Amino acid sequence: MKVNGQVYGVPFMWGPDPLIYDTTAFPQAPDSWNVFWDAKYRGKISVWDDLSTVYMAAQVLGYDKPDPGQLYNLNDQQLEAVKKKLLELKPNVRKMWATGGELTNLFQNHEVVAAMGWPLMTNQLRNSNFPVGEVIPKENTTGWIDHLMITAGSENKELAAKFLEFMITAQTQKKVTEVTGYTPANPHAAQFMTPNEVKNLHLDDVDNYQKRIYFWQNVPRRAKYNEIWNEVKAAQ
Image: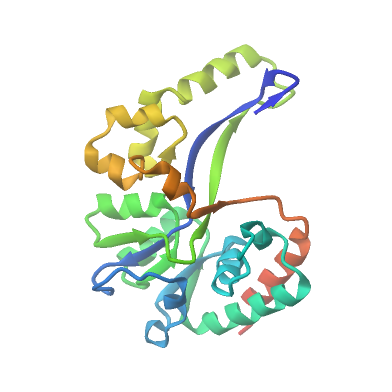
């Protein structure tokens, strides 16, 4: 992340918005987001209180084909179809989550059996010995890259740059991954991991894994997206 040759930020961690599920409720891993709409899971699903849920419904409707970037620039007709699809989902939604800990608790309390989440929740649930599974459905999913940034008004850019350099070293990235379950931006972190950790983070197949993630883009009509999402949330 450079401006006029000056470094202002670096990629830190990245990951998908996967489908997380209770393996005791699914003998086989669900392979599609459509499972959220299955009537037998009424009141047992959770979705993120975020526009990522709008993107997910748009994927179910096929609006990412042939151009995944279309997810972030849906027209009015497509957004109305997304709203209709999400309203049909509401009877199955136990609760919309806003924080990682909130979704983890919903699973641990057996209030939900499937949700859109983050690898962080999967990692938290694994560490508590909860029977959790994580999958990117056949429709694929959206995802994100977190950056560490230096503000233009920083009074000590040299110190800030040294901090960024420390945070992206392989050993530091490995430690962050242990806590979050996110994928390190520095691929050399893999040398400090067990084969199972490398496999769980897909570091043995990063290129193909990334192809299944539509990384977030700017949403030119964000206000309209928010309007649609708020109408979905407000509906009874």
